[in-house]
Length: 502
Image 1: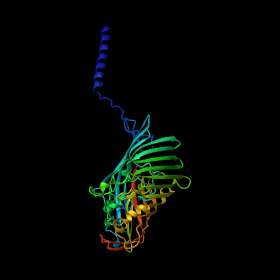
Image 2 (image 1 turned 135 degrees about the horizontal axis):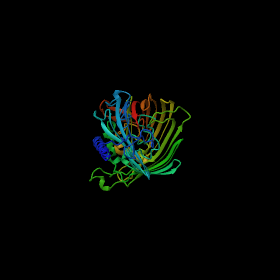
Image 3 (image 1 turned 45 degrees about the vertical axis):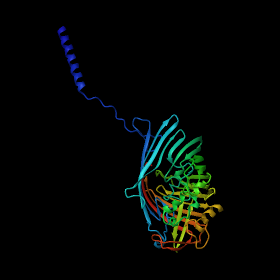
Image 4 (image 1 turned 90 degrees about the vertical axis):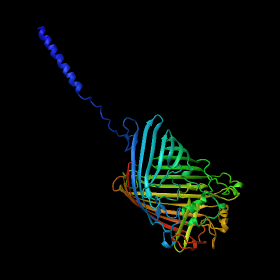
């Protein structure tokens, strides 16, 4: 009996040893795969970065746009270069039709902290725009900012911009100071008071809007003003750089019905030395530091009961009404995003030309600040979930006081402000007005695909219309007497854009 028991125990021990050896030869079981999880905290498109509590969304777009009588992404002719859409004999050798192809890529990363949401966002891309960009394209970036505990730092929209019209049109309107196309670097803090009410104080990079202070003592404008950006922009060398950032204050409310904002800005409008050389008028110093300012208001109203609703991402899903107005002195970039030159040829040997500048000075004077104001409004209606039409328009008024007008119009033996040529007849007055009105219709056959047509009318009115100047031949334009006259131009933009989680 003892022998049988010993045999049974021995056999059991052998089986256990064999089983253990076989188990040792088996592969180690892999850890469970950690699949990407959807993050629903911040809306559609976000997912958790594996192994973290950070949510991320990747986005982008491909845009193809054709433009008639416009360029550089929807800027109507007449801004920055001398153009004329009404006939080859009165225009430069430039394109009637321009095109832009652009790709975007964006990253939006967010996580919850004890101080609230920590957000990082950036967007960059490559574009090819005729005729300026090389065939290989030009790299750009228009957004790169961090938001944390009420602070916003980096490149984004200016906090002076109460609303944007980018979802109403394809062009770049000149009757408001929108920073949306390029962005601007800000250092801002926003306090939330509840019920959608907030207040923001922001220090913003003034280079993002630009600065133009004109020294009338540096000489006449020269005929280059009528032929190229170089001729016009050479007259802004009176800038002395920036002393301080632009300071922006805004009070805002955002609720279900829409949004409203009141804002103000302080802008450095100081001039450089009186002379352009060490041995010239520079020895007599420079004008005292001067600061311009601007105030404005913006209103957006959602009208959900008026039309259809839409599920097209990145576009308003209801009818909307928008209005923004701004008034400034020595801060012209807050009333228009087209500071610098306005020059346009017309039929019958006519030309309209002017300049948008923060202020004017000459030897021994202070800077005379330029007064300007603008208003931009628009309405967008959804005909169906896939069709929408907007109508929009704006007005810009630029006024130089009597002292500034005298400085500009006596420089160069009675030269006309815009051309630098002594007028054959008439008077010199640099004041000008700009009207713009347009309509865009967009079709979204499927979500995230935009196909649309935008038609814009621009009217340039000059206070010295009727004066006559003599201009030399330049390029395709013959020389002779030209009458300064109001000008207008029709611009057309056609766009196809594919978005993904913008």
